[in-house]
Length: 132
Image (cartoon, rainbow, N blue to C red; front, side):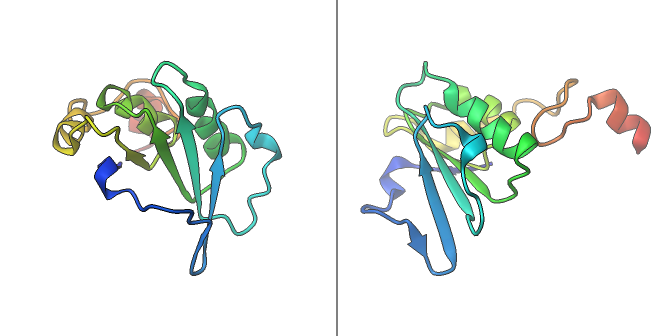
């Protein structure tokens, strides 16, 4: 997972960059009804860290919609949330201003693997090991 400090944030609207089409989705939107043709990045917003609807949106986009592009977490993003974000399908997280990228990277290295499947690796550990 790529981490971005809030100081790296590009100001202004960026709905299209070259051949990239970026979709900014509010956390109360139904992602099952989104038109994804040509979309290369979807920004999902966390208005506050206690509002986890964007986790569900990311999971649905990856598992049910099969979205292969970038899913970016924006808003009130803390390093404590990064592992769950990665497991639900996020590729990139833009951290809140008081969060440090190096601590976030350390958090992501904390666990070698997980027994349960997730949005990115749907097979549980025992099934993945048996297939290898």
